[in-house]
Length: 485
Image 1 (cartoon, helix red, strand yellow):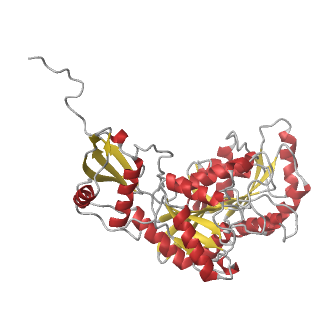
Image 2 (cartoon, one colour):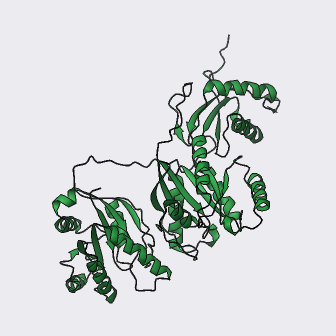
Image 3 (cartoon, helix red, strand yellow):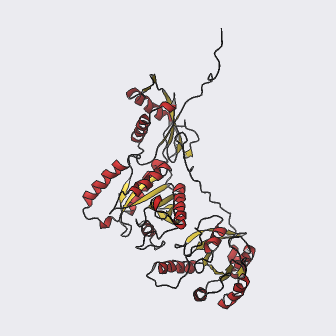
């Protein structure tokens, strides 16, 4: 990216709407309620032939620094300091307010190149507000409509004018498009999710690549300490935190490097029970969090160690397993626990008993605020991700299956013995297997669980979902009438 562009303004002037348009995706939550955006969000932006990093910020408000709005303002001031050019946005329909004048002075004192953007200029009566914007002393306003896309070519010209062509375009670079490959959103028992294996019969299995970037989503109930954990990981106050529950609304991505490996962390809104979600804004936040889960590789579920294993915690873990993501549990706020050995033994017992669908689920005790256990947590994440990507050759699978069938064959159903012919792995991320057998519909679920647990123990796949699909081979003579002699 050749430069960084920050969108600044008071609440509800349309900053997130313009951010989504420049990013080319509906990333930021947009609602008529003022103050939707709280954390600053950074994404690659494109405006015709311009390539840049665009930053969405919280609305500037005149409040005390100790309040939530004051902490939001501090995040916005950081964005101003890091930006190369500032888009100062006003609402042309509402006209200039005293807050616009105050924050206009703040932007002017920063000494950064500024483009004054008059949004909602398509509205009736917006012309008067646009002319009134001259008294801010930030130059000629650029009238646009972020929602409808009007005036965007003029905005491009204004950015080039304040930056200069050499700074705006920068050195010629090949355009790189990042494609986000996500899983199938839902899967029936007969459909496997995950990445296809090109040649299931190949014995040459590639080694796990520790250099590839890793996508990690941090999820949990409200006020479990997700944002604090990410701030501790990256070593700065990157995300808004505080004692208030439900501060995070958007799913914010943060780039990080751990032991030389590039990692993208996704902070998400707290997930409450569905019956308690009434407001439209919270529904949007939860939808954004679910999307982050679906596009992640590993999901860290943050439990509050002082009140662990609430019903909602178990439902979150179950959701992640059904989506086929690689789960790791982090028992946060461990610094508040007194009888640690006793509590740790109890947590381990409950993890095995309450989450039997994924045996061997890794759980780590941490303190996000104190920075304790972060390396241990990342070791568990890396190991779980490696297992999630694991492959087993068809030869090893069928040698194992032969021993299983000799020791514990499938039961007889309606007086007829079920026959299993062979097994092969066709998916990874998570591991997915196909079993060829007679009468798949008649196979008891208890025997399917027996096979899955056997795969988990024999081929060392603890703590990740395993998918098993039953299929029958096609009968070439099915449907043909018997020939008379």
